[in-house]
Each structure stands twice: as C-alpha cells, then as structure tokens.
Image 1 (cartoon, rainbow, N blue to C red):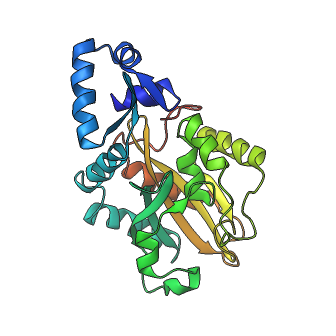
Image 2: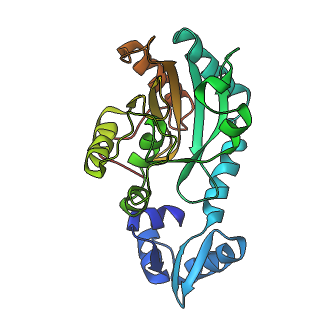
Length: 254
C-alpha cells in the first residue's frame, strides 16, 4: 500500500487509485486505509482521498532498528570503512521520522576524533535532522525520492551552517541527482562543512531508499575523493542494503 503511494506520485490519492495500483480488492484497501489512519500511517484528506502520514516514516525507522541495520553490524561496516579511509569519519544516515524530508544520523564510527572539529557534538550528530538539499548524504537520499518530495526540498532555503561548496542553484542540484542515480554515489566538496570533503552512497531496501553511508575526510588530506574510497563507500552501503546491491538500476527511484 505504501509503495503504491510512491509509485503513483503526488501527495494524495483515492482508494480506487490505490486499489488499482496494488491489485487488491476495494474492500481490502478500504480496511487497510482505515486501520492505517488510526495508526498514523495514512491521513484521510477528505472522503475517499488519502495520503501518507508520519507513521509511514516511523515504520521505516522501526524496521531499521529491528533488521540488524543499526547495532553491531552497522558499526562493524562503518568501522571497516573508517579504517580503509585511514581515519576518516564514517556515518550512517536514515530518513528522519519527523520534521519533514530530512536525514538523521543513526550510527557512526569516528574513533578518537573530537567531533567538535566538524562543528557538531556527538549528541547533535545523532539527534538533529539535516536538510536533504545539503551535503553528499542528503543529495544521495534525495536522488531516490519522488519528484513531489524533491520539489518540496528544493523550495527550502539553504541552511546557514552549510559549507562554501554547497549547491545553491536548483538546476545544478537536480542535475547532480541524475548523476547520483547513474553512478550510485555523490561527492561533496566542503558542501556541509568548511574544510571537509565527503563521499556518500545510498542504502536501499529493494527499490526504496532508506538512508546513506557518508565518509568524511579533511579537505587538505582528501582534496579529491579517490576511486578506492568511492568504491569502499559504495561497498559499505551495499552491505547495509537489504538487496545486497549498492543502488537500483539507472534512473530508478523509490
């Protein structure tokens, strides 16, 4: 049912449209929608018309927490990426369950690094949702979201704390999303924070975007992201993807 909303695009759809998209009987769709409204998974916009609610995002985060994505496995994958990068910072972002289309750090491997040097405390990194229009990990997630959500994110102002490499032109940003879907990764050059370059790759569950793996290194140590670290980042994301693949087919999105 949730996938049908994504496939149909737009914000709201009739129960008949959803039934046709899912191949389910009208009465079954009606029962699921009514139950979902009660649980917050769907919102009844008006009689017979529904849209996804915040509960849908909460289900995704709940699934992340109970499918061994967060925990020892994720930490081991991020730690391996950090070691391959010779001491970089490896973080796992997921779509935030509240606050609109944002990303939230849910796991990280930073060694003995003082996170104040990246402009945030560990608490802030783990709990504060971040704009999807800023940074390699944000753009990676945004690349696989429906057009309607992309347009909402593009309408947001660029966050003040962004680095000097942040993409402010929406046409350039949209073009970068095409490149991400083609190549399976994004590179950020002082995009989120001054003095730090990055590489990110998508974490997918089948054909749906769930988050991104992000590798950060000081710009003076990594003026350009070498192919070895791009592949290592994509490999880490693939390990945390339910499909076992790092990104879906070219041009495909959730």
